[in-house]
Amino acid sequence: MGINNLIYLRCGALLALAALMISISSKAESPSASIRFPNGFLWGAATAAHQVEGRLDNDWSEWEKQPGKIANGDTSEVGVDHYNRFDEDFALAAAMKHNVHRISVEWARIEPQKGQYSPEAIAHYHEVFQSIRKHGMRPMVTLHHFTSPKWVAAQGGWLSPETVDDFARFAAMMGGEYGHEVDLWITINEPNIYSFLTYAAGMWPPQHQNVQEALVAMSNFSKAHARAYHALHAQDQVAADGGPTSSQVGISQHISIFDPLNWWNPLDHFSAYFNDQAFNRGVLKAVTTGVHSFHIPTMRGVETRDPLGENALDFVGINFYTRWLCTGIDRYANPAVPTTPMGWEVYPHGMYRALALANQYTTLPSGRKIPILITENGIDDRSQENRNGYLIEHLKQVASAIEDGMDIRGYVHWTLMDNFEWTSGYSPKFGLYFVDRRPEANLRRIPTPTVDLFRQIVELNGLSTEMLTRPSR
Ligand code: BGC
Image (tube, rainbow, N blue to C red; front, side, top):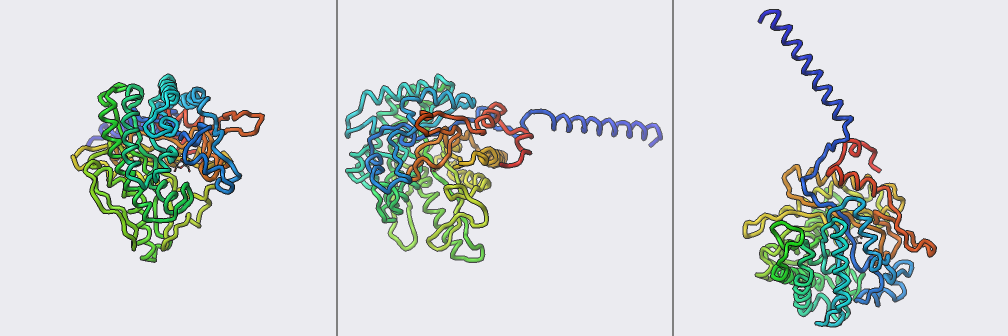
């Protein structure tokens, strides 16, 4: 090689190096996202009727008035008056540029007596869905979020096969009535949480303490979902959001991560394994394969097949919050780290693990592949200092899961505004908007710092380098 060629090569290398440095420095300064979510990704927030609407008459509303049931003697009586303020509330979600909004309808309002529907309630939810759409968002509608009409409770609640049929009839009615306004349906919210807290842990009405009943309830919920799935598809024939599908029907499954408390103890591994099987997987298996296999060691479980449950899912909805460390029949929050006021560990990598678990149910027996939607994720952050870091860290995990090939179509944050947090009353603060409950404040909604961050994330459809490098608080 001659000396001239060497000089050209050196100059070329220097120029290439300079170009690389310019591109790196412009990347560092550019506001462009360093993590991008897929086009059309759904961004939103969620609420549930009993937690926000106010003035409800269902199986919870009487029970919660009894002394000692709810922290501080709170009740859902007023909620956050969302029943009257829904339009203003949807404007608050739209201010974050959300393109989807998850709510639940109150079955007890719509069908206060078995087989008798309330025209007033039906008209109300038409207004609600039209308002969500007017604000540029797609309604994502949950049919059962923990509360049931009193007549359902009187016939044995979710232990009764009648409830399965009644819920399917309700779903058919909803599909026919609202199909032209709604495409995204969630039949049931967290059948696992509801079944265990209601029938095994004795915490929610009617406060039974019988683990076998919880297994029966999860099986009944799975059957109810399957029947509602087919009913919604049969009745909802209009593609309200445009596109090829008139209805996409999923379930919101709560997924907790279970790890052994002591890594060296095989019994703790065994305990974590069984918690995962019984709590996380039973319902997902039932509504994709039709196989009902609900078990707890040493107890008679449910082993049956429901042919209607085979392929009865269009997306796997997951709600992820935390991880539990298991030993024997007990489970604890990680003692090595601080917890939220709810006593929950903040464990962002659990989001990746929950998505990986959900991903195992995305190939149906028919061969059809279905996507995953995150239908809840959030933090009780009373100091308002931790939610921004929480959101960023969890979204990083979602992005890694997408990068690893998982088909995740959306992220819905729990919750739009502070609300009635079941037996904990109004003290927890999960809201993107803080609700001022002082009498003189008239339930004023006040944006937390996350409102601005969330809007920026949605506008970018991703996370900027600045967001990724800021301290995680
Ligand atoms: C439920 C919500 C609840 C949230 C926070 C989820 O399990 O779906 O209703 O408010 O957790 O506890």
